[in-house]
Length: 89
Image 1 (tube, helix red, strand yellow):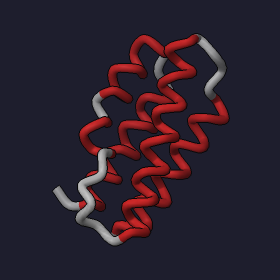
Image 2 (cartoon, rainbow, N blue to C red):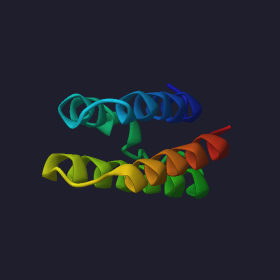
Image 3 (cartoon, helix red, strand yellow):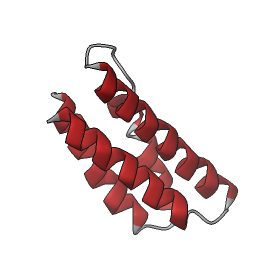
């Protein structure tokens, strides 16, 4: 799977999970782990963008797990994933 395909799949999953209650969103986010883990094969800018997306997605997951508000965290994770997509092209 190409870097762009991974980023796009992660983006689509985030958008779908954002509309779900925490108990349904968390498994979707957990399913993204394999997609957003770095392999070190992409250019540095892409690896950094993927890393930022990974960290932002983890923050959303932590907030949902703790029952905390995640509205702004969703926006950050989606934005980071969009940046990853744009650099992966």
